Length: 128
Image (cartoon, rainbow, N blue to C red; front, side):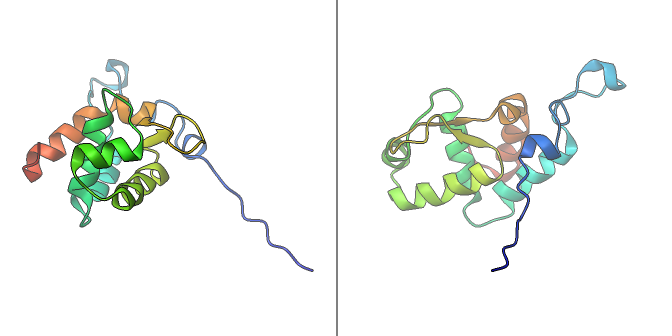
């Protein structure tokens, strides 16, 4: 029997820490990395469910919540929230605090460091 091994890479292996976060030492550029903004722009503004994903990111930026609580607050179906959170998780914008059922979602460190990009995109597409 022949098995194929597919390598799995984490976001942090592909994009080392600090890649999307600039400080004054890199020539004076500040704010979110343009590459991060491009990824976020596609996930938020480039897809049909992007507005809901932006609202989820905005909702959990201060208080981590589980999918059921997010669904209740946003008045959306639980499975819809799971779909959006799965996309956000695959793109390393949110992370589950635990592996258990009912675990709370929170922003990843890279998303926390680049919240200004989300705010800018939300202003441009007219969503608060």
